[in-house]
Length: 219
Image (cartoon, rainbow, N blue to C red):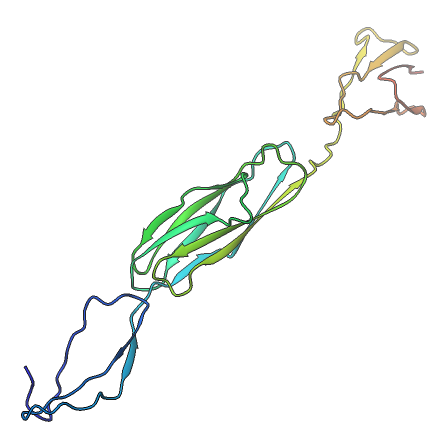
């Protein structure tokens, strides 16, 4: 019902869509039935979800032929008041089988967040650099979609130092001048490279050889 002249009258507009601009105007009618022209218009925008993604990109690295790198966490946050549904998917132009997403869809209430595990499977990958793009979308969010870059580097394993070990015979009842056999055949290189052996007997004699076994007498 119309209020008395010179009083403020309010009207509630309901069932509005989020993240939408609405324009409002009125017409007035007097007691004689005369209808005014349309008034000036005002506008208002309804609240929206606000999508925030962190970190902005993810970087993984692994050695060729070794274990997968540790998984990392993607945080999807709604910084707005409106509930939103979100999805995460790989970009159609960069779909990679080595990228594993812990979840692909969910719902976020206002001012809440969700975490997603991002894992990598390096099986069958060669040494080199790889890249994928994932797309994060949120319904009713003003800043959706957002893209995240996933970078993977497969490197040559580091060259490990050799493992040295030796034994000698005889080990008992030795006297000066006895010939002793030194055996380093239990030494090995993790990459199976050929070994050379540096022998230093601390009596003025030293030598480098590719032979695993050497004899020496102490005087």
